[in-house]
Structure formats: C-alpha cells, structure tokens
Length: 156
Image (tube, rainbow, N blue to C red):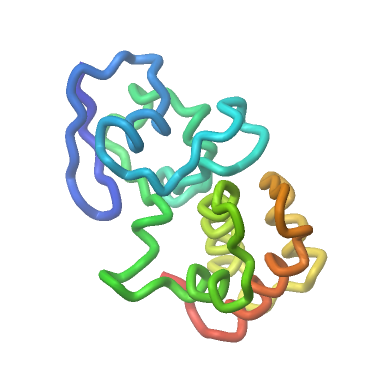
C-alpha cells in the first residue's frame, strides 16, 4: 500500500508499505529519517517517540496504515534548518547526550512538556520523562537539560 503523510511539514509518500509495518520502520527505512531510534519495539523505552498530530507517541507501536493523511513530527523536525530547537541545544549544552539511543525520545518528550508547562518543577519533568529509559546518564544531566531549556524561551 501507499502511505501519504505530512512529515515535518512536508508531504511525503511511502510505497509498498505493509499495513502492519510500524511508523518507526517507515520513518527510518523508507523515508530516510533515522533520528527516532529502534531500541525495544515494544513501546517500553520511548526512544522512538514522535509527534502524531501533535501528540507524542511511540512510533514502534503505530501501524503505518494508521498515519495515512496525518501529520508526523520527528526529532529532526524540531530544528529550524541548521538551528537546533532550544531543547535539542540544551541537551548538547548540558552534556545530556551520551550514546544517543534515548536522546530523540527524551528530546521530544521534553519538548512536549515545555509546550504545556513554561517552567516545570522537577516532579513534573520526571513525570513527563517517565516513559523514556536511559542507561548511560543517570538522568541528572537530562533533568539539567530540561531545566536549561525552560530558561531559554518558547519551543516551536
């Protein structure tokens, strides 16, 4: 089947898609958007989180056939050209990026939180990131990155 979807503001088409194929697979393998990571394929780690119609979802759990005519925004779509979004830049500046597997999902989850809550308390940050697993950082630098991003203004 053919899937027509708007990704990061651009109309895209993926051909020869099997209905049960995951959105994650379509993004990475068919459309060349490797930002979302394939870590667990069970919706447990959050590494593949993207926006689907402005709602964060684990793209490994979304069947490609479900995105026909909808809007997807990936971690790549948060940046404006070569300029990183404030959340992306804060992760770099705070040293919250290590192996990189969890980073895309954490960035999208933090981005969503900061779109909803201008200056979140630590408890709100922890709650918002609870569905994302990181095995490298111990989370403190991730919390630092979200706090830093909160001081830097509006997200897109």
